[in-house]
Image (cartoon, rainbow, N blue to C red; front, side, top):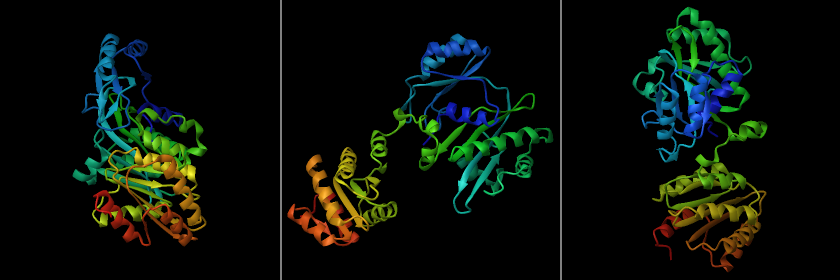
Length: 380
């Protein structure tokens, strides 16, 4: 789950990270009122969950409240990478002398949070990594010890900060780490963390990505989800307890188990097809859940065939077959289906599907080939 800039920065501030004293507006008039409250030049920033806002014209400087209103009117309603701007953040303009990148991310291979920093702030960290990897300094944080002061000092020294800035930098790095851990985040970054004319540090931009699996512990954070900027199918899938990610192919995939879903997508590609989605219905494939999954798959106009791949472990294949038939009766699809059932009571499940004239496959390879043929209109 992604957070808007203003949401991320407010979380950072709870842990001692200095941020600009700005506010959010949804109308040009609100933007003017906020700018009047701030006094002096302000920055008007589009709040959308994509990068590259500045390059798209979504970040503008305004010297007066009237100009802030004008800039907000230009930005609100703007389309940035397919997303419509509905809110703008009005922040005081910072006295920027230098820009730093500071971020935290989980390194799954090392099973550690890694803190990264670079003197090349204001740029995408991926671009820095590709063009100037030596500019990125990293430390790995022991989950039992947490972030230590010497690690922050090591980073501060590595990116060339003055010794007088080590203490405030350490406070910011520690606060960012605490925000990361307390929020069950996958990513937390400040880009840029600016050095102002008086030498002070200020987080003028912020980004957080939260782990959906941890949101049950954070109802306050879950309430921050912006449904307007989320794919409607993914919203519906989450509400139905399904794991769904839309892709660009033509073969809809409905599978129980994340690993099996990945294998199914791989073998579809192996036989020349393109999966239209990742969809894991989990265990207990009852009719209601299957119907919800089918509705989501079929809402994609690019889907030309559906491959159902179910492994019956605790779940019995005959129960899954009944659920599928009930769901198909309910949804009434007009595209071909290929169904593979394997595991407990698979023969009974196949018999039920055969009676209803649905093609079944015994192996995943056979099912994938049949689905690819069906999508091409070649399945007999």
